Image (cartoon, rainbow, N blue to C red; front, side):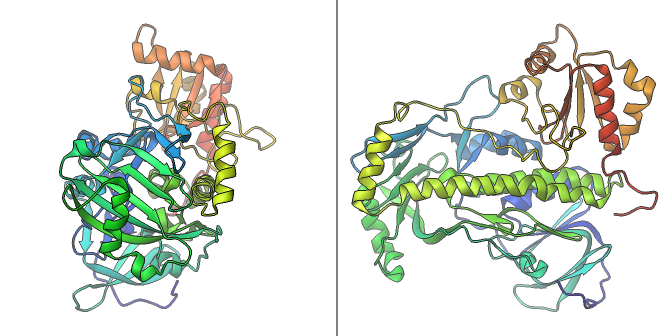
Length: 521
């Protein structure tokens, strides 16, 4: 990042400057603005990008999207996903991952969605927040670091003089070619995966002709994918084979030729978009430099085979929003933000690794190797048995979780609150919460709870006879606990088995990243 003084700025500084207004930048800016902070967003495109990229989000991302206020709109552009199937060239199922929606859960395990609809809903929500300022059609030119913040020099995409935006914190949500990451001097690891695929987004003239599906066809002659992309939308993807010229592969005539493998033709469908992407696997070597941070594709990129690219970025935004909130409020030292990378980077790497493993399995073009793969997978007894999708979790061995005296994760640290429990308990709120089946009088008498007030820790005593509280109590009992501190991202900070352990847990939280007497943010 530049250390030279930028041109003078006459604008009042924002609390947080967000570069990029895709789904990750949208979620982050909304969550921060909802907490009362002044947020400025810089987006280089003058209008919303009208074409889809991602096509699904998981239950954890649905929870976060509901927290932004767009929950009532999700059904307009999303629908529960069909099971994820990997099939061989003959259509035989090699692997099935169950994604069926359990009515006891608040959100489906996976939702197929039309991304322009999601972005429109998020943009509409952002427009209703008076403390969120969006500057479309502005290009980020230069980032200058300061001890107390960052300055971003921008210019309008249609010309005009440069101007400087100042903020206490800056976050790059500006995608795989991130200007912010480059300004930070952060490098990218190379996961050794780089293959070209053409994505074809299609609107069937009659939806019934192409029912929803999520199928990866591991055909060595042409690996390909057919997936739902929200109500009324479908996507087909095709891998570029070795020896195929990239220029010829990406033309519209070739797109229609390949779509013909699925019976898609101009007479029954409209090709909205076709584009060739290079699927890569990368993770930035650092996500924070002083007052500047990265999120989403600016921090990590992965092939789409596990459907976790956008979901990982939305989780970044959720984790970063509540921690920035604590630092901005003076409730914690800036070092709290080191826990963001400590928690999120390993989880993102795990998603990258799973995506690459699936990609290597699906993208085989050697017929002999593919035949061996098919035989081995078909012989598995569970090849066609529905299996629940695994929820996204943070890495509990780093970051803001309860720890034992030897430094290892404490009881329950990092566990997600189960979807069925969340479905009954409802939204737990934007602040940490202490759930307890015990009388909290001892906490108040000792002063432990009051010490945790700077974290805005809320108390929820579980009442006998209350349906939601009884479910929470049963969940705690299944873990051998009577109390739990739950983080704003619905992860367990720690569990307690009795009132004295609950008091120690609250005291530990109160003392984590305790601010100095001097304001630091």
